[in-house]
Image (cartoon, rainbow, N blue to C red; front, top):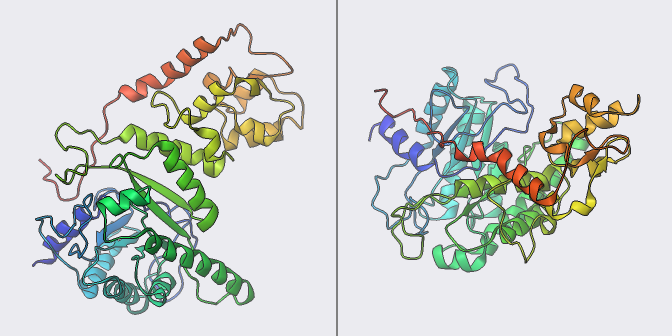
Length: 421
């Protein structure tokens, strides 16, 4: 099979994995090496889109011994199969890098033969890139659940970031749709990676030239909409993953109908839950940057996110007793709870009020967007002039602010391999 044919097959097969993002790592170029890595230098890419991508996102192989019902690469699915040799994949990566098509590599794989053999193939690929080609660019690699811990460690010493996909939000769903996979087999390498990162940081603190293990951390991904778990269940799991395994990021992937299995939603007229995925990302942002807890965002009475507005607005409307917040006295935590105020705006307010009391005009000059925040703030004890607030009116206004964006058509992802027309 020609190399380009393999690239077509294996880049397309990798597009369902969303768990790649900015590098989170700074590494300058060194004499005798090619490439470097900047903190925000690699953006996520959903296919091998050569016109605009930062990462070559590809599988080592799509031959798989597992039969996960939600996966396009399951062994029972009749799709073209291919496998890169380590040398072929390195040739592609370096060729694309020298042409300035990419800034790094996102390498995943289906499980060929067994997890150990698959991991060894990936290690061999990364060793050639790092040692023979002296490649210093960003590499994100997928750790394979069930692989020998020593192999996972070798993979982490070659990659900048590792990820282990948790796939489905609950053990019953995993047992139903992916009987070859076990929850413990997924969580065990997560714990190993966490401990390896902690130990590596301690070693580097003593000896700065010590080898670094997954210096950009680890992430995971779960599929949304294929199984009946609520948003509350998903966010509670997310919170536990952040707390226990110190993940950099949890990614959510709206289920795409790639199977006719009776265990999954019927493909005919099925619409991927993209809006639900979007709301989960917004809620995830609240967990990571706004100091919310999962149990604050959703509860047993309201187990799913409201698709009409963002989760922060929903929380505010359910906790009106918390508002209004006085701009000139509120602490940082309280300011972060105000809809429309972000981390930067809250920090600007704290700095500016050291000079003197703030007014609504002063907030505008600071760059604070008030179309939502004005309903939840006071300046020196006063609401914005002429503003009248009722609970029903506030709900209608918050919904109306998001309605134009929700009605817009979804953009189409371009592909390097589509005909130009």
